[in-house]
Length: 123
Image (cartoon, rainbow, N blue to C red; front, top):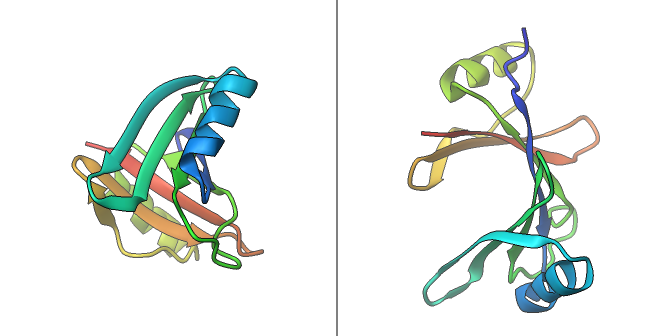
């Protein structure tokens, strides 16, 4: 039985959140599900678009970092502690579980070719 419940987000790291939001909303016609920002922090912008079962997320305004600015896959798990233990016991290297926002707990890793992913649990 897999601890992964499904791909919930594809995260694109972008420099200009407004231009990118306009492109995906106005040019491609995607519907904005939510938009969040931390007051006074231009690096903490988050726009989610409805795209079916998997949400497209723009995370910006980010300065590109070679090797770290590629898309990231986010997988949902029901119980992050159990999933973390199961995955690490099978050899998957994950960061410590952290809570970047209220009720969200995540752990991050990379696949064998260095592509980033995370597991997350909404509480």
